[in-house]
Length: 168
Length: 168
DNA sequence: CCGAACTTTCAAAAGAATTTGAAATTATGT
DNA sequence: ACATAATTTCAAATTCTTTTGAAAGTTCGG
Image 1 (cartoon, rainbow over the protein chains, first blue to last red):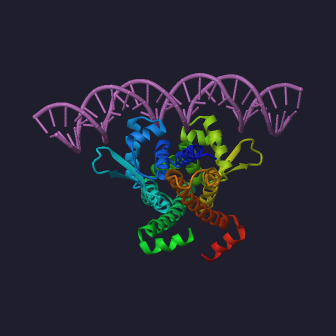
Image 2 (image 1 turned 135 degrees about the horizontal axis):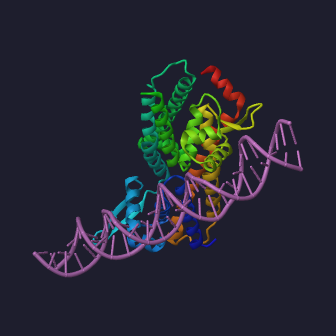
Image 3 (image 1 turned 45 degrees about the horizontal axis):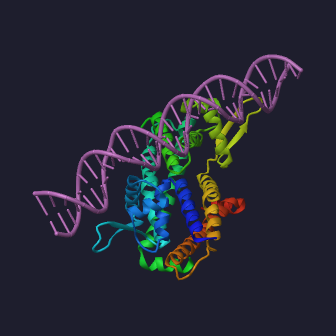
């Protein structure tokens, strides 16, 4: 396979993966492009490579920076901003886990906790079934929360993270 | 909090969680409704509760069945079909993991493997950077695949899972 | 085999998310 | 302070997804 073709395929594959993850396609494609680039790219280069508008580029690069997986690079003597992606894929993984936990798991945990206090007759089968379900889901969610925290913490912790890399 | 309000909140929360997961809102809401219901519901009851059309109900119930987290229940002497959700949330978790792995991770693993064979001069920095990235991502993806398989396998093994529950 | 009860399909409509591009804003060198 | 280069914003346009609902299909008791 030719390099140009391989590159296009990777960008496209990473893009659909992102789309299925609730990350938008363009954001994932910019990330893919930066992941395989040997050096930082400017907004213009990104626009050119992916055929997208300046506004779109700006918004999505910004979002990638918020997720903590892309950094702005300032080249001395240059007025333009350049962008580069975190190359350690484990760090990317934990950053994504952290971000998604914050956006998805944390809010539902909060709601589940509140819903534990539903009023109602314990003998009413609808109320009973509701209570049981909420309790089970809560436990599962808390377990998931704990697991994710371990994973996220692992990468922040130098020692454990080095250990993990032995297995990768 | 009143039961009716709590129920509405839960359905709405589960719906947005689903939406962020790439599962559509209605599918997640039907799932939520069935999760807390003490007994199986008919298509008409689902339509009524969630204010959605018959077609929408049918399509999304079907999809939930494909995911393996909702079952059709036939009541003797009744012509209608009734639907019920898997109540063990751990099983729901593994079903979702299995399904998403199949749709997301497996295809990217296949592509990554193919991309390892990119032609090109090892001294070209673009080719070198591409190769390195693909290799790192591949390793990470394989590790993730193995971890997910363990998780999925654990629940698929009926005997082991039953045993676990006895002792926990 | 008929007709009623129920389920499925799918083209069109509605709704949601993304993208564009030009104008506004901000930053930089002289 | 000015001119210019670069970035940011956001309303409108486009594109993608979901939902509707009516028609077609299926199943079942008699």
